[in-house]
Image (spheres, one colour):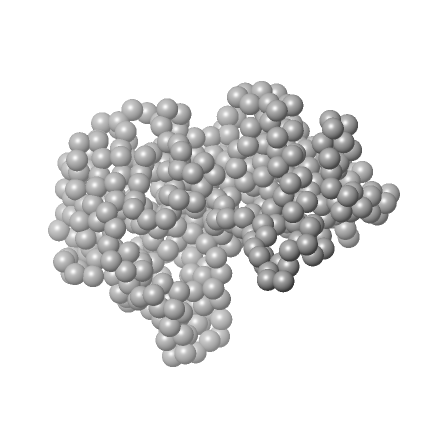
Length: 436
């Protein structure tokens, strides 16, 4: 019998970063990966070679082998060498091979063209709002004509995703404003009066976007510079994902700008850590096989749990988050929160090949002073051992201290008349027995 695709219920991540609240306007999603790749696109070929030389020396590798290997990896992944050959506008680089060939101001927004890291060029639009905002980072309503705005938790509604091609003009506008570089040598080609608005220019979210020689960097700048280098080499050389790049970068608290730290620490959770989904995992299976029936049961049960949370408790789905961070069971989970400003715990549905769907219930408390350090705190040899042991950990989304309980949903659903597939009943019984 021919195999057919079957969804597993498990979410494949596209990226990881922070969703910034912009009341009355579109929220922003910013990720280190976008600003790291944009940084490299704005650097000159000489500056990129300097990065690779520094990496080679730190890793005891032969630069003569590292450089061509890296170039081949970039071309293989992107389909072109654009990222290596284009750069920012400078005093000597004016008209050709520019990552940002054109910028203009049109009333309340900046528009222009960004060179694609693959092929061709993209138009972009960066609306700029004059009134005060809760978080003074980025440009709400920013849009570019590529797939960055197709993959997000709300299908593009009320969310501007800042991908590589929007991060480029943001970096250029911010650094032109900060540096005071004259118009003939700056990145945007705009005069100061063309950048000025009635409000303060937005801040960049991260601290690693700068252009300096190695000898002029402070120790903290050198640390961030080398972090970016290591991540970009892994991204192309080891084919890591933007999700993995962002997860690694966000472990270093030094990358966060002061504006972003204030948003993270705000009592109203102005900045929340979020996972952008790519798609739900699908695998090819023989219809009617044991594995096929199990995945069908899992996806059906997940739908039933979601309906139960929404219809019985008036919870709302708020996207995707990381659960069991730093453990063998780390996963991307569906998250549900009380409607509006409702009180009560938050819930996540955790799915794995190793266990049936589990509800993670969290009672959120105060902001953690250790918000940059958030691994799951209950270390066990098997996830079943967490079932009867509530514990305190840091919520990955809000970075609040939280009381965590794992709940097996099957008994509750049965009481509500919802049928739990027999194939999963056996798994739940096994978990209970193992967790005793």
